[in-house]
Length: 536
Image 1 (cartoon, rainbow, N blue to C red):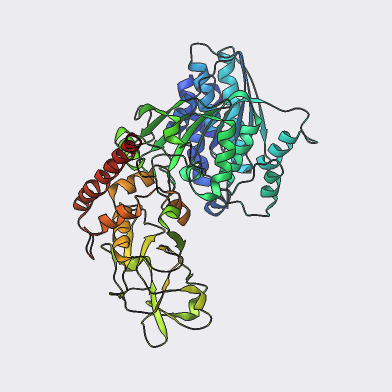
Image 2: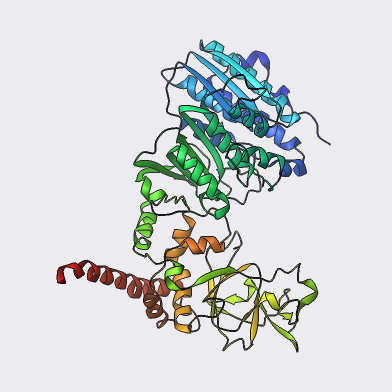
């Protein structure tokens, strides 16, 4: 059963003497108290991960604009940590605003009480510095109200045109056909997750030149489900800074958060030629590095998917430069990548722990070892699938395939892990690939063995793994991500494959082979192509 947070931690007479630097610390006590009281199940349902003080301060410091008056939007406000950090930042600057108006949204009744307390603290502090302060706290659904504001509906007398928005939006999937999804679709802001929905609405409520700073999962940077959001956001906003946390738990150390997080800072204006990319190993202020990079390095001009690549250091730049020399798509190679067809819970009655008459091999991620498939294996997963009319559509003809794990464990060092399925080692006429695998094929059939070994070697390179992490902030490697990559030519992959045996060499040796056999060929090919016109 939920109880009220310990708001008595803040004594009213003492709060009147707060300094800007102390305001966030006081609100942090409210956050910690509320965190202890939140129902874990409801917290998961609402996607509630409240912002710790160091992260809130870092986010507030990103704002650049100087104005005599501000209208701030804080949607999904929690106890008001971000608003408090923003107010403290504005009051600590040499040129303070004359007035501040805050509009905050929070649906959780427990948090609303603490949020109102935070607003009172902000008002008291602003009064001490001669800054007019007003606030409105809405205990309503931001999606519903936001769409109404955008449309100028019944409850929106005028468009608010916020100057700033600071957000730690809730993280939860939005189902197709849900009321919130339909509302968003009505204003062209349809998306698959609540956090991108909040961002889309906030962007539409910003005045021209308005700024937004938000901390979100990094998953919006890639994947086909987030493509509409990326296209929409980048058409309206100019990215100014992207800040990544090197550790998954750096931003939300108190919570079991598996997603990598990013702080984005954007302005409602045309995109500039450069932006800042920064990173930190933890949440603490001062622990960061930053540098300016071309926008075209972050969002490639010829990429229809609009993937957002975050390269936190110059080593990552060299990776981008290396792989930028590769220009072939899977279509160019005559290859396709698909997701394994066997979904275990749907095929449960056809699963067999041990292969026998009337079965075919069933390959799981656990069968991948050392760049090859080791089957059968004595583990908890079924090694075989019954072959009958009901499983016919789940199988592929025997052949040489390249398999890639779709999901890596959070403790694994590699994000992309590939192996060759070789029918010489797994004799069969047909085979089933479990749904947590992606498989490369040629029009539904296997690949030439040398090509398969070269492709697997490329996918297992440190270079490719590092590159993949620049736009993927989660542990999944989806077929769409693999389709969006650029690859060496078919000839180059076959040349590489000639240097690879049944087992992949040690990582250092593999990377050396990639460098020697692949990128030296790329340079040579480019020199030849550049020299061709001169010989005509």
